[in-house]
Length: 413
Image 1 (cartoon, rainbow, N blue to C red):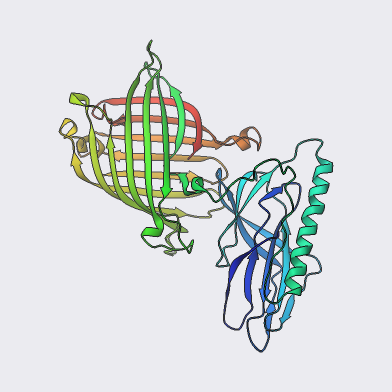
Image 2: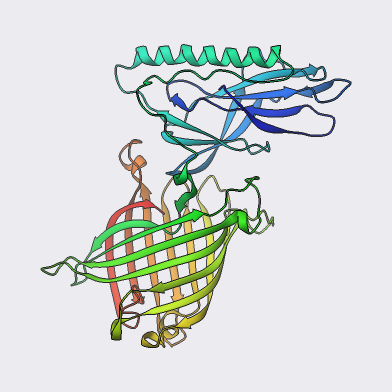
């Protein structure tokens, strides 16, 4: 992995540590490589132990961060003695996971550096020659990086290998789209209970400010605009009209991990903010509410295996439209999400609501399973199976009871 210096940190009495940015394109047939550079930052020289393994986190738009241990290159020293200003590069290697494809994010959690992004490709049959050439090119670039690190005390610049197809534009990974991420689940599903009511949901969030420190928990650094749209589509009638659509823009403060530690949970996230929901209609079919909400997200158990997640969304109504003045009787003030499963495997998620009126509320259960496991790793998304019973599946008929089972496809869960 070669090219420009990302950045690094220097702890007292130890070497400065930095990470080399990888090539912007890579092949899964070549090793995954991360190069760590140690610099002598003390006037009297520096000594540092070089760990045998380097722990990184890999992710892409379809996969949450997954831990991976890379091994120190054979022949690399276990201990370094660095003169003032001297640089030494140590390379760590490993295999790309089978699920790795597309825009891959590589993070080294132990170091205070920005993550790197690589566009990974999986060569098909008959690509052995191209793969061999790519390996040679990567090795040459890595050698250039190592030589630069050992032979220079002032700079660290190396040349990335040329893309295999220079006629193709290099993807801009750190672009406008990198600020987007999923918010609530996104899916399309169809089912029937006497009525053929399909349902689909789109949901995303947009990060307003890119923080200088990815670990920042500051308000502006974690401020997002979020938008969710849920529609019921009456496919059973002649003209197949939309029964109802809910539009839900929101401004939220969101943390995947608050950093709050406890013996009771493994990880705690948080989402809080202001949300508007309406169906965009006028007259007697108009519906709308505005809420302030807070949603702590607790995860219990081994996060790399099947584990439990509990996330109560507690809200206060700042405005309720007159046409749905009694909506709290059916919806209440809390959405309780209970989820069990793993990031890489199946998940079962149930959302419970209890209205303030006796016998009113709802149960919404969704089961998802990765198509990469069901079919093969080329597939993204999930098999989606859902069941709803109760009140308020859509805001138009919030006071009407409905039950329905559906099956479909999900792109985010």
